[in-house]
Image (cartoon, rainbow, N blue to C red; front, side, top):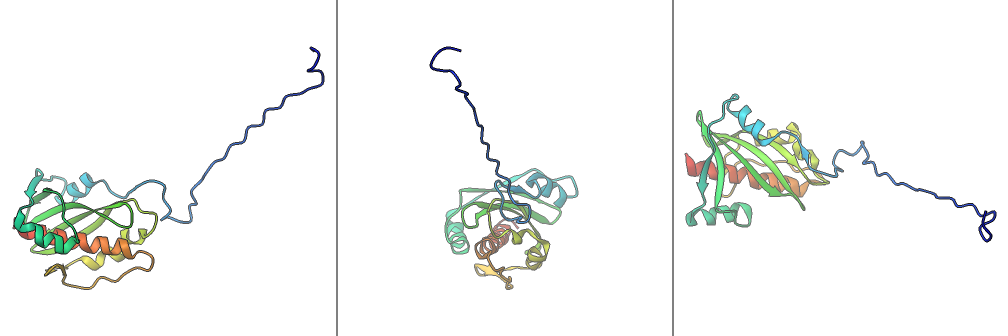
Length: 178
């Protein structure tokens, strides 16, 4: 050994931290929960053979009703699928901070099916369960609101309100293409 280093041992200590999301809290997600791909929802709605997507231009006459439903405007075009007496809509709305992607099947002016497809929020995940979404079945548009009350979920108010707005929007948009 060279002088000055005699008896000196060098230790390297490596400390690693690993973060594991707790499995007991399904709402505490670090990334989006893809519950069903939008393309799979569309295919399922049409028995595996979906029609081509169509585009609904948002006209100036539509902007007022849409603003009353959503509390804001939306883009200038909305994609939808139509066939077999029904329309299918894939819509997004912010819950608290992030978009909730939801699929709607509308027939004869009422909701036939609703499903949360992608959930990105850290709270309010209960809106994805059929026990909640089943409340929308049969709902129609009454003015700028749904024709029936939708029970809220404690701790998920913003997500519930987002889905109520989206349901009303899907019904309104359906009325524009019928």
